[in-house]
Image (cartoon, rainbow, N blue to C red; front, side):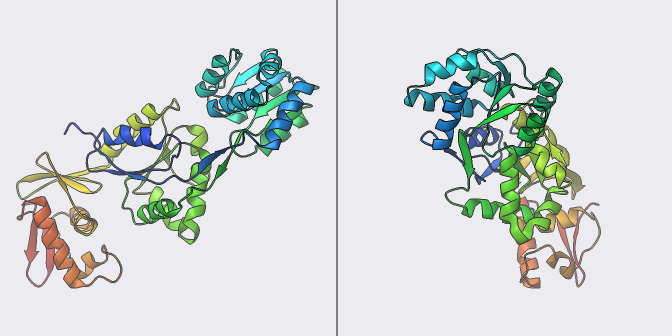
Amino acid sequence: MREELAGFTIGVTADRRRDELAALLQRRGARVVLAPALRIVPLADDTELREATRACLDRPPDILMANTGIGMRGWLEAAEGWGLAEPLRSVLGDAYVVARGPKARGAIRAAGLYDQWSPASESCDEVVDHLRRRGVAGQVIAMQLHGDRQPECTRALEEAGATVIEVPVYRWAPPTDPAPLHRLVDLVAGRLVDAVTFTSAPAAEALMRAAGDRTEAVLEAFRGDVLASCVGAVTAEPLLRRGVPVSAPSRARLGALVRTIVDELPRRTVTIKAAGHLLTLRGHAAVVDGELRPLAPAPMAVLRTLAAAPGRVLSRTALLRTLPRGADEHAVEMAVARLRAGLRAPRVVQTVVKRGYRLRVD
């Protein structure tokens, strides 16, 4: 198949660039579930941002930590509205500028400034280590925040003798409509998505908070059937701390994130021969002799269970355990009937009278 992700369902937790990421995944055949975990609230009229800007003008920083592109652009745009853009650019132009990643670097250069260093890992910890080795005692550091405050980084620099001016340009807030995020939690816990993408560490934390009393079920799904795919190492940290294996590209870009998913998900498929047909099981579909056959959750659950023990007879009771709670043996019969119809290969699933069903592998 030319669409590498056909048959897979992928959750997208991003807000600002969700449409771009969704389009990249859909172009490769994936079914996408949009569930923003957070939204960015700009602070252009916020008194804290204005006070931080004034502090930088009153005591020009020796070092500028530019953490995000959207944050640097937002800061300079807000300063423009206050009539302070030129004075701010002037004092920042004399500072030693650290750009945490390529987007921050792009915003810095678009403003006519020049960055002197960037961390290979794009992490704040590496920035702090670099500055401490360089020496910050007696120096003023303007730290452009990316959403939440970073008390550990601030404290480490202050303990090294620096004065830190925190510059809050935006903050993270819950999504306007939390329903899609809670639905995604249900889908992850039920293993009804194949992967979830994360483009920021706060988004990963937000999904865990939304899970509530289902947190362990979500974590178990991520540790097994559901791929947690992060745009970079910094984004992955909240999941790694919880023992979740993640996939992440070496460069933090959306295109690289999608390529990582394209490489990873097809490797998780199961391929077997049954009744003369070649079957490959993908998220919500089976590929039968090269043709994609989408399946509803119940028939797909039955197929996965039969495929895990090809040729072995499984009772209705055993198959019933794969279906939602409250289902009965009649639901198993319906799921098998829908499975046969969906596969368009009725001989693949064989009925063994008074015993159950099996995948015909002879």
